[in-house]
Image 1 (tube, rainbow, N blue to C red):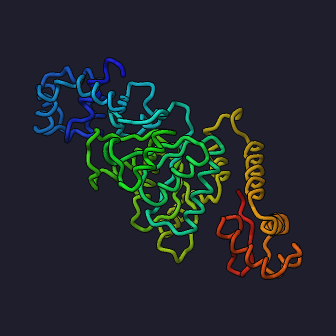
Image 2: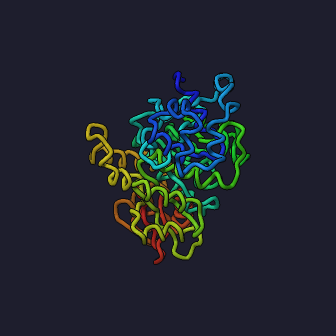
Image 3: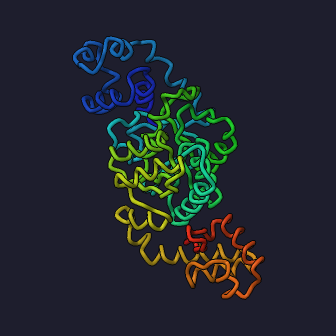
Length: 377
């Protein structure tokens, strides 16, 4: 924590000032200390500040005891990072209203140079949405991406868990204080994220999860990421709000296509109609984001090798008969059960049973014509 942090903290937690007005003041004065030292008369000159805002900015009571608060936060394991700190997520500095300070918990706060990508979606995913979230998250983790999401039920939580299972960094951005989990049932997941990554919030510890906080939170999820992936979202999903912010911020927007008749796919399919990039794998995303990646770090060859290695690991974990069918579909293309029997030389009952298990595991998928196709890693 640097010597200027207390001034950034003061500006960041003033009720009613908000990130947008704080940014306007910072654009005028350059840093939080210069804002702090201005007399009351200086603030009355600005149309974007009401009398209430001016009173808050000049209130001496709100300017005292800040060091004690910061020491107490540090003692409870809560970090405070300000916009002038090298640990502040650098991509957030590009948005129109970055928070003057972020509160965080965790051993691995967002580092400059990290390739962070957001994964969001519905709180009520289908089996397809769960499978695609796990597949894409694991793939991105294997390619060195840090996964960002909001710790909400559904797609968010699945993405965090999949990243943790893959041994990758993951970051949760909260709509409440970092000292409380929301929803409460995700408290153990939040502990795991803190252990292996970090949780962030612009709201001070103790802040309740008010409904109006979450749309504002969403701008930070995409703001600290180079792109956003939407996996299943209804027509009024919060994931679409996040995608809207991503568009305003110039971030890449990706969407996984879904069943046209499923309410949980309407939002993602609408994004595709409006110009989002269609993706079905981590490799699709990595190709699109190649402009952000150093050629020495990742290349077309790397991605293809990763894809082959991932397919090998998936096949090695299957039963012998499942392996036969999976390899058959991988090499020969879509087949119905009769084709599996003929090419794999196994009985029809065993082929049908294995096909069901492989579909549940996300290794193959059933097509509209009744055939089965191999799912790329």
